[in-house]
Image 1 (cartoon, one colour):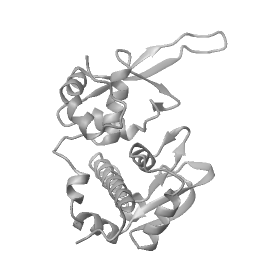
Image 2: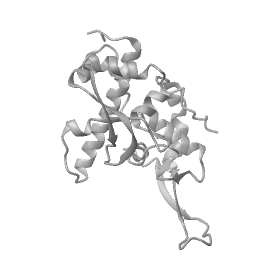
Image 3: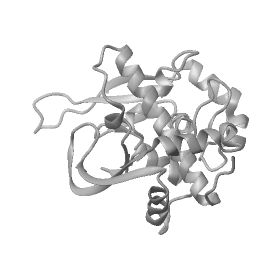
Image 4: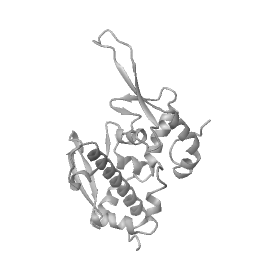
Length: 231
């Protein structure tokens, strides 16, 4: 079966499909941790935008692949017209928070998932060997590497302008945690009633080893990511 869409639209569909599959894995993990199952039509909606300086998962993946430009809106519209995605504008984020400005949310349809799964070469493009990090996970690992030894500091609830779900993937890596959390005490200023606690994320020994051992592989896989070669 041929794609039936142009090269740019193929890349968008692959990226949307990957985001959908990651959200499905997150949702499944929540059930296993005792959370309440939700309907797919609720959790399949994905955010597109930048919130408090941090890009949503879909936005970040498209950005890393240099796919965001003045034609992004038209590409979404073309895919929706073909029935591969659904789009809507809202003020409410997936976690229930409201924003001042409306933003785009979209959802891949059954037809869209079937297109990606059945198109030639799609499987190779969207997956790797078991345990292979996705592009945004590798970017987070590289940020932690560059911030050694202290690690990445918590700033307004975000570490390195990267969403928590990405860090959580590294923390829950099957072979062992690649990052770990720790905290330090900051300086107590005269106007403060308590000494502030500062939170950090840093590489574990396994994380450093994983970065060193696999740098060349990921550099070839994701050359656009700013990941310095290990010493």
